[in-house]
Image 1 (cartoon, rainbow, N blue to C red):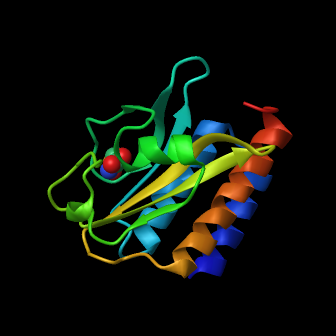
Image 2: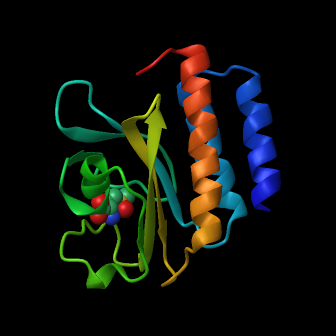
Length: 156
Ligand code: SME
């Protein structure tokens, strides 16, 4: 499933949609095809403020469309530039709950020319839903988005 999703995303982005349409498609496609991916979203760094802004998502709408750097799992990744896999969200002190159903989460930073510009964030209603295969898959998704941004919009 992961490799067919990568092929689908690659092919979709090769038709040069807008960034918004491309991100919407990625969110919808992987949220529908991967059973543990209950919420999928892309946050991007605000150009001036130390904030993450939700740009695209699939799943239930969240109140957390703006997250300050340092707050929650997402805000920590904005500062650390590191992948963050949370097997059990109740174990995290610095966590922003979007839904009481969420049990585990993965956040992978998105780099454009080595600069952390945003992230892909996945929530699962199942505990321990994500492993190294998800890390590799989501890094590949972000690499495609990064190449697309450079090709179509230039650096963010
Ligand atoms: N749980 C995240 C907030 C974003 S929602 O999952 C959509 C966090 O702790 O940063």
